[in-house]
Length: 401
Image 1 (cartoon, rainbow, N blue to C red):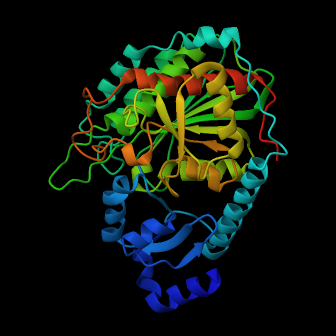
Image 2 (image 1 turned 90 degrees about the vertical axis):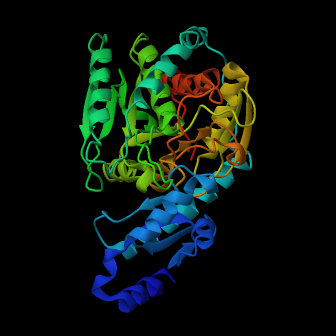
Image 3 (image 1 turned 90 degrees about the horizontal axis):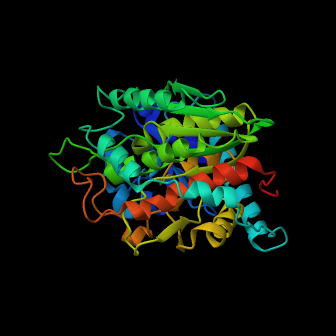
């Protein structure tokens, strides 16, 4: 089916077709926007399409109206045979869904977490003021859009802060910028190497870029989307550096270009798969400030995430957090966890609220600090990241299949 559709596409559009570029997105999202679907995987509800610049803009503009931050994955800069890559991706989606269903049925569900006094002590160090200061600083930039000519100014400034923070760490910490084929903006990568099992990796991620899609606007402060998640990770790092070196490696990513198709994370996750890296878990923090379902009520995305890690979130919530968690779906490409899931890594995506009650002002110049945002609410997400770093980073737990 995929082969016939791709062949027909090439014959119909000819050599000029590739002015439009290939994407993956949620099937319903593409249909709602009347973008022709060229191939789809019905079980995962992921579809392949070719979009021109106008259609891409439509996807970005309407993403948050459909409960998405990103909304699609751009495949424009991928090397290799597109037909083979698509067939492999669809096969992987189907396989991962079957594994998740197998786990969810119960035979492997034995996950329990007991509160650790050392972790409880570390959680008390999370500073609401630090989160607010970081969000205020990041959102003071006119925008952090990956296509802006100054796209890397805030990236470099953030990298410099990381270098200052890690200068006095009691063990080596690596901070690097990652160049991308798909965007001029760079991603930031920080590694705390594992003391005894450095090959085992826990990934903590958030996208760094912002975007506005309202007519006549040029400002994209992106306080909630996604200075919030970026700040959560920075605060997690600050506290983690006061703890003993973890047994597993903890890798932080602040991704470039999420708003234009998961650009940075897609390249990074594909590279990790190609290098056969042992990624135990991937956490994505994207929008953590708007308590749309009430203070300390979080959303948890059930699609393109790992059943095991969702179970783990429930376990650490019972042991440490004591908040309300409402499950929901966000469709393929709603944030960078999709890039890692597509490459067969276990992923988790907690969210500020349900999609129906998320922040309505993202992707606009009005995404700024306001009384409607709540930093006590956002503290919970820093705690999730810190628990994963301190608990998973020092245990032998991993996805059981």
